[in-house]
Image 1 (tube, rainbow, N blue to C red):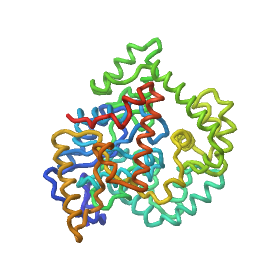
Image 2 (image 1 turned 180 degrees about the vertical axis):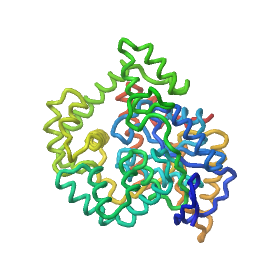
Image 3 (image 1 turned 120 degrees about the horizontal axis):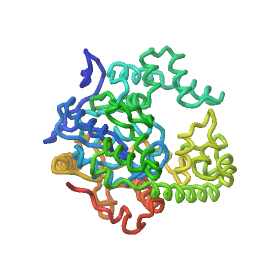
Image 4 (image 1 turned 30 degrees about the horizontal axis):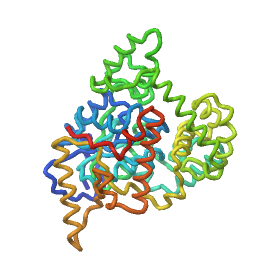
Amino acid sequence: MIKTAGSAGVLQIPFFVTEREHTVKAAGITAEYNPLHNGHVYHIARAKELSGCDAAVVALSGDFVQRGAPAVLDKWTRAEHALRCGADLVIEIPALFCLGNAGQYASAGVKLLESAGVSCISFGSESGDAGALAGAARFIKEHRSEMDALIAGYARAGMSYPAARAKAFEELGGSREGLAVLSSPNDILAAEYIMAMEKAVPVPVRREGAGYNDTEGAGHRFMSATGIRDLLCARGDIAGNRILEKMNDYMPECVMSDVPSADEIAERERRLFDLVRYAVMTTPAELIDDCPSGGEGLGNLLRAEAGKADDLDDLILRTKSRRYTYTRISRLCMQVLLGIRRSEFPAADGPGYIRVLGFNETGRSLLSGIKREQSAASHSETADNGGTLPVITNINKEKSLISGDAEKMLQLDVHAADIYNLITGGSVYDSSDHRQPVRIL
């Protein structure tokens, strides 16, 4: 039993903690940085402070993010921003899990970070209440089968997944504090992180500033990534200069210099819709239903609406319903575009490698420690590698380290980067993952 870092009072949570002989003690963070803003910079610093760690390892979403969309900036640029703003080592969450549900995304991030040897995992939280978060996570884990059965029943009756989950939690006797956790986006993810942890200690950081989906920053110390993306799209209007000044208040200078213009974003959206509509119209309904977010006749419905829609938002709105959320349809569109099928990954239970996007000198020390463990484990029949995954820094030279599902995951990441370059107007050759170097600061 251990006490969670940063919690008030004694919170007893069972963890299986194994000491790792790294020179540097590291805190882990799962993030999208879409784009990175001052709230993220605060979180990195606060995570180190609360945990007493010397370094931060960030498991970063790739070129497609969990809400079901291409990222504002490519993964390499966002990795460099993270390194410039307090991170020490940045690794990629495979696209398969970035476009999965919250549980799959959180579990993938935790597996990567624990395999990288972090001592704790920090996450933003609306409540900042470690006890409520751990309690909700524990309750869900203990009642998983009953909750899944109830959620399935409520979904058949037309209820959305978030609403069905909250109703099932309450019906099975979950606490009022736990129910409040399930109503907040960051706290939902926090509970998923805690459920996935086997070795690391959870370190919640109370969210400061605008809420997760808030589009306004006025009166707040920090603006949400959603609000910043809305500002990016609005820069072409009559108040463009004033909006640019406003963004300067909420983003580091290194990010401001890289964000695309409103016209560029509009052009990307046109390209994305053309590609998605083509993919939907040329993919049989049964293959759309084989996508992770497909099924229940969504393939036929999406195909029927593709020819009528004016843009991607219109297509999603035409397809969504009370039962099928906007985010689910968004993810489904990206899964169709990238050709992600359930049948291709029937046994995938998490990432099969640690793919490095960037590091500084402290991160280099962390990588050396991970590789030493791998080497020791490979030379000993009895050594326990603690679940350490193969480390890939050069996909052209190190593909032999992986096989099976892991190899297919890496091929999907490379393919996702190629499609991202088509959407953003980048060179499919020069900007290919096969030619991009790891970012080193």
